[in-house]
Image (cartoon, rainbow, N blue to C red):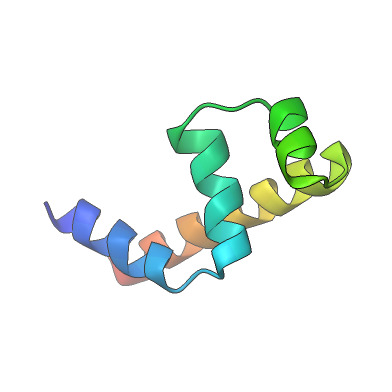
Amino acid sequence: MLLKSSIDDILKDLSKADKTLLLAKEYYGYTYEEISVLLNIPISTIKSRIFRLKKRLISRIHRSD
């Protein structure tokens, strides 16, 4: 329950674009190619943004512990 609360707090701090990318990949299971077509963003951009988002989220989770 505590982890879910922390994740919810972190997600609400993300921009709408970042939240959309992260949820599309991790929650809905879209591939990078599918996200690229849906959002008209190059695959390499999507991969790097999701990688950076995950790093940032992990860092925040570790700091909140």
